[in-house]
Length: 192
Image (cartoon, rainbow, N blue to C red; front, side, top):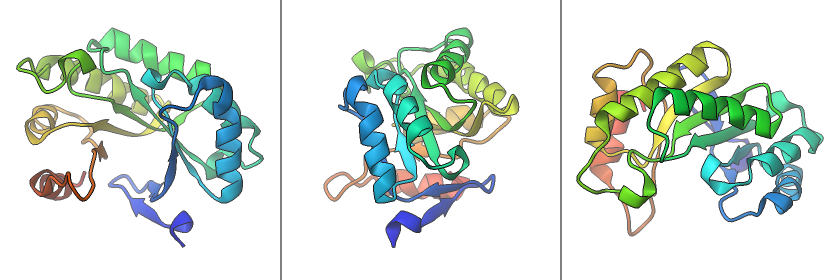
């Protein structure tokens, strides 16, 4: 059954194949949504700073009746945060807001701020700084898995050129009418 299936990552962590995405769930309703999803068997709960519901998601994780270690909780650094200091501070704020001691996964939500998504400015140097904050958070035990979201091959190559820890995940939009096979193949070849 898919609720029990996982993907292995390069660091040995197992990511559930099916999870609850909380985009568009209001903060006031997020805790109940998480509790209900966990009752149904979901073990991956995905939120983001930009969703505005981390507090409620954290409450749901803490009150769902399943041990924290049995859940995989993921969030994303807001796309507009492009300095080391802002990213590092936001990771700590996410943990505090959610009331959790650690996250299973934290990723960069987008290579560019949403207002500039897929425009000329690529934020290569800025993303290296945000990546460094993720590496440090992982080294400090705040996050187990670090990665990116919506990154293209050149965005990934930029990080790979100087990272201490390889990205473990690239969360991308992938469906029948949007299949970037070349990007998927590149990620697989890199162990992402």
